[in-house]
Length: 311
Image 1 (cartoon, rainbow, N blue to C red):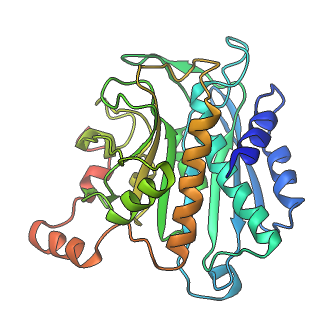
Image 2 (image 1 turned 30 degrees about the vertical axis):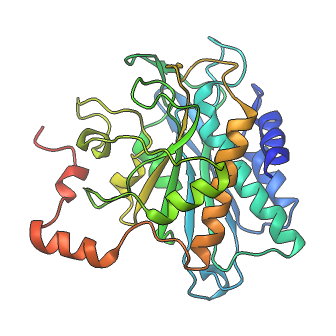
């Protein structure tokens, strides 16, 4: 289980003084030697981007060739102070990614070490702005989202799980979590069978896949509707990206407080850990490279969808 890690991270992040340094200290205390904090400043404030590498036995950080999984917490902010007190719903993306990383770090310390590296990255901002959105308000970001995502994405990542609270909509209607089809280089590909299998094992229930549209994989700021920022890493990264959405049956605002459900957060954190273990062993594929190559051969590049278009 990953409940202890979820509770530890909630206690750390649910504070007006939460910062990247405190998160880094927690991971450093477990022997993680590659823990980085970068402070980004924008027109609406600042945030701390935190990157932690949990090394694998045959990972790139050790000179090996095992694949590297990135687990990104994608969000606007963990708090909306001084407007609202406490951790907001949107902050669960950061909490889950860090809880999964903390579990992997504690496993590493005990000797249960994945074959490949796992890079966990998110940002910590306890006083982010809010933003209007339908059907519920969003959390805004204190900095340009692409500065934030560029700081989180690494060229070392061979695949990315982008974890984002996705409760502010009327199209998922499921409490727990859901995954997206795989997105790579502007293509929306079939949903990974391996991820569906892992989801079934973790939840003991039927897997849930949420719908995405072409709009969702285009960059923010182009004037079209996005379900949220969950697939914005696919605009920057060339590797396959899958959204891992923390969901609810009813539409819940990203800036709502008191919305964090420890049972749901434990389940999705455990899913990320299980994907990391399987991916490092080569037992989990997010896409079929042969089929993807055939798609590009037939229909060409879709990278124009990763630009701002003809503005």
